[in-house]
Image 1: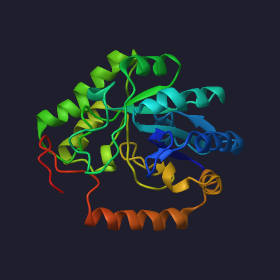
Image 2: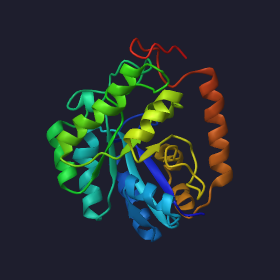
Image 3: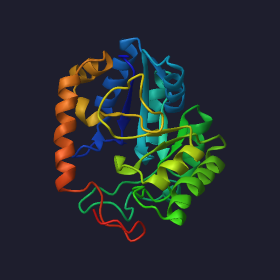
Image 4: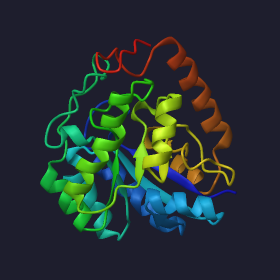
Length: 261
């Protein structure tokens, strides 16, 4: 299967680093998605289509962390083009900042959308997904931690959004522990990773790949990805990212997770 992908964004504002896409670039991305003729769907809709073998020609726009710039800058640009999107929020940090315990040193600290803004996004037709309670990598087998990050966070977001929360995005894309994987399957209909590639017919809906917008920042690259191309490029970038992660973890040691990778 080709031509089915999910894109990941974080902050839609000016800034240095891979988490930032400036508003003009983001608007150009959205125009390219419209021009592609692909069917834009939410993350949950795309997961359903994968299960049914009907995902060909679909694209999902997703945002990790639930940053304020998504509600204030990205959402109006999406609405102007009638494009749906999924916003994966950190339930315990609504209205706060992205200084979670697992954040690596030097990571930008950015404002997060408030509960009122998340409610408004849901009311306006955006899907609200979960990104944990405290953005913890799900590498632990600890039952209390996993219940907080997967179950309690879902309840919080459903109360705020006034809608079911069916999709989860793994913080840092960290591979979940055995216990976390089991609870994910019991709690969510889909789980989204940071594996850098398009979606295949054989993909597991609890380990779906996404293409980070940082790697397709140029419209030319994005056009290629939307057309189902760029496989060698994305494979090379994926290999480099994998080597980097073996040397330096994406996340810091966290008291709550007890993980020190």
